[in-house]
Length: 289
Image (tube, rainbow, N blue to C red; front, side, top):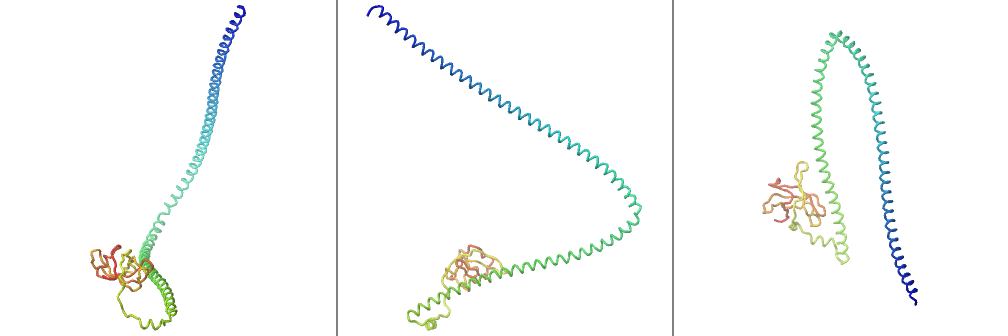
């Protein structure tokens, strides 16, 4: 290779390097210019949005101002109308005042007649007051009678509720007893026995009550008599007519409860004994002491 060729090749390499460096520099400069242009565009958009918001706010404030001005004008018109109405009322009041003055003059002229009428009215008032006193007395008596009747009605309703509960319980117990008796009779007959002969031979007169313990759940007064509800019922073999002893925690005797109605898990009876007033919810009841 000749020296001239080597020189051209060297120049070509140098020029290639310079071209590459210039291209890189141009690209970098172009990217910077693009970024600046984008930033400028974003800034313009932000300023435009702010300008639009300001314009919308200005429009809204103008509308509010127009509305406030219209409201003020309406209020002014209303005040004018009220002023006109007030003036009309004042004129009418003046006319009425003149009429009242005329009427007063007429009434003063008739003073003597009115005095006599007042005297008669006072006499009639005295008679009415006596009638009112009599009516009040009769009304008080009627209220007392109504109160007593209401108390009697309440007592009768309470008695009716207790009687109805006893009737339902008795009907349930009777139906249950009939079912058990039928089952027992069938069982005896299936085994070749005679139910009537067995009942006649095994009948027991008297007998001790089963041992049942419970507590008083509720105490109330019905028709002036104390009653209590206890925590045991037919599920615990409690039956109507059974008597429970009411005792304190320390064993002190308070009285007795004679059962008059029985439900599945509770029973109700009348309280008797030396310390009926001390029978409270929570005290113990026992069939055997």
